[in-house]
Length: 181
Image 1 (cartoon, rainbow, N blue to C red):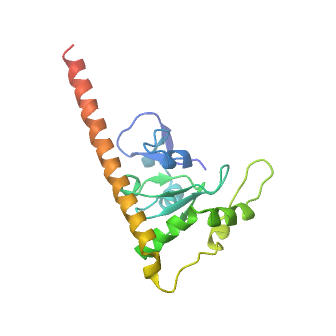
Image 2: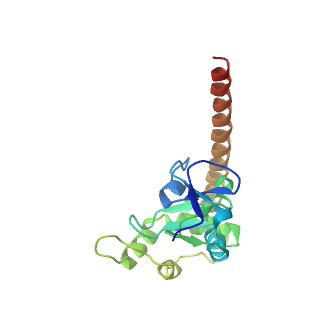
């Protein structure tokens, strides 16, 4: 799928288009840039469909299947490859529990059973929808897992924010030093 006009430099209307690898990396340096102002109306609809929101759970669907990531503030509203299956769960506690479960051996085994493809493995959204997720009748039994995931996401978002601040400070320091040359 070709989206808008591919560009090499950031600018007005230029947005990152992230591959699954870029989403799974802490910094996402392998993002491609596209000029959305050059996209047709149909392409803009496709772009809207593949944007992710904070709280989305994404799962790789081809190649190395079943890798799971949680979309944080840093990636909110970013354009992401359709090689990631999106899972949206409105109930925050249930979302955190499902995120933890999808990374477990039990969910990974279910994904492996559903993969297909001789050379490159694939999963479909239907395979993810059909994963059996054990949920306790008494949600208090899941509280430790939910609290642990909540904390890890809060810490990840703090780390991402600090990395961004540090990077901006370093850029400013280097540019200032170069301007003095």
